[in-house]
Image (cartoon, rainbow, N blue to C red; front, side, top):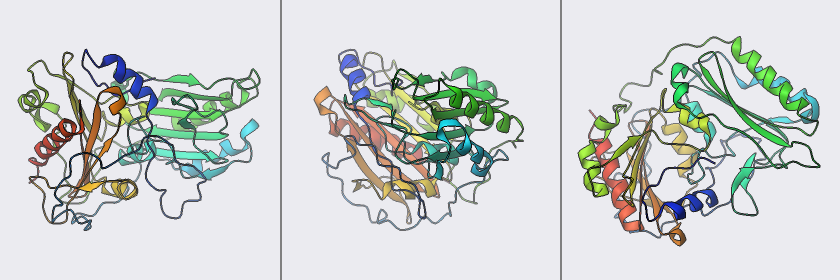
Length: 380
């Protein structure tokens, strides 16, 4: 299982264990959804960390710059994949909201939202529930009781796919037969992730994969970047420009800082960081803290779907303006010797996330605030 890299020699074993145990729920389903998906249980977010002074500009006022879900950069929509609902052992499932699964096992953002902010496609045809859940052992696993197909397509990945580690996993067999599998593959320049259930010696899975591949192969894509409303906050993609490495080194307590792209449990989310979304993480192999920034340009609409469902605290940040929103929340993994805290901002139509991890919530929040404020310095 992939997990966010939280470095530190003394905490490495505990962190690896914790990342396999913690799961969080995505925000509420989009209005009008007919999804029967259930929330993924886990530690969730809490506001037990340092109390922040509410900002007068963090009152939930709508952003000044409009934000709407972008049209896909590939000429497809979910109706193109409706044929999966008549295949083999999943015949008869219905189209549902695909937001029931988060992108990462210690995070709160729906995989569907990340893919859609990048001009991608996210679809689900199922009989309800979520295809990845917290299991009885506390791991974040494929749900063998789930029946259906989920499809995620990230266009314009191209040669950058060489830097992505595709997943190919199946849930535990049921009655000695494969029950649920996830597969990542490239079709043209698009990254495709498909999850499908079956109990017929993979005949249904093979048919679903084949149908999806043929549909994507026949579709045309247009190059990005996505055109957002005038004034949309779009900071630099380069990590050394987004947050200067020297600043991060000071936060993490040493100059031996490693800069990388955020690793995501569901690789379709990670693929968006090489196309439209912006993501950077910083850590020291010998340290006990890490920092991360995720930016979804024009993604205020996605923040609206998630943030209202979290237990958050308004927070004051340098660089906030009228109409901005800034909220903080922490994930309690103190039993494993560290904490993860996040600052969520919606500024000029864009969703910006500053994430800190460290020995306690005070340090984690300090890191999250610092990188969030540094990202804000790029506003016009």
